[in-house]
Length: 158
Image 1 (tube, one colour):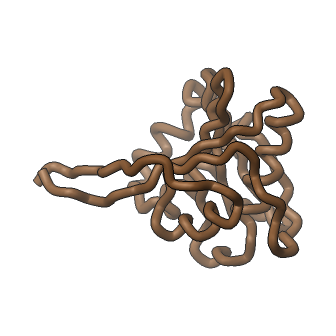
Image 2 (image 1 turned 90 degrees about the horizontal axis):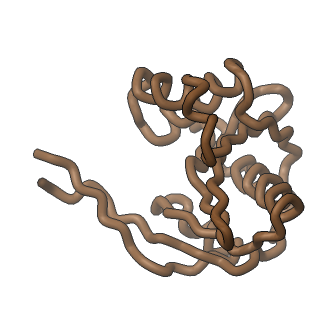
């Protein structure tokens, strides 16, 4: 087995205010075949996971029947970004934050995350949030108020 990557686990008690103007993003919950397919497509490309795997996992309705709630961000009617949450009694876990390569560094993921977290706060009152960061997301998450709480090492069999 060899190390594939190390990813920091990050947490915040409260998200900091945005430090820049964010683009308008229409937030759609993953609730039908179209949004399931968009979520699977963006996840496949963003995380370099084979389409067949993402389609099997996220394209199926059964993936969305539990506590895993997904959201797709649309810019000018085009699906560009994803995020998902799992809510516990005192923490919102953030997962699958991704943006299509040609749309990155425009603020779509941050805008989507902030809107989703506000929606969850309105529903539950929970502000404490945790996530596992990629190296590319670390700077953004730090600006949003997240701090490293632990590190995860991901291994792959040789």
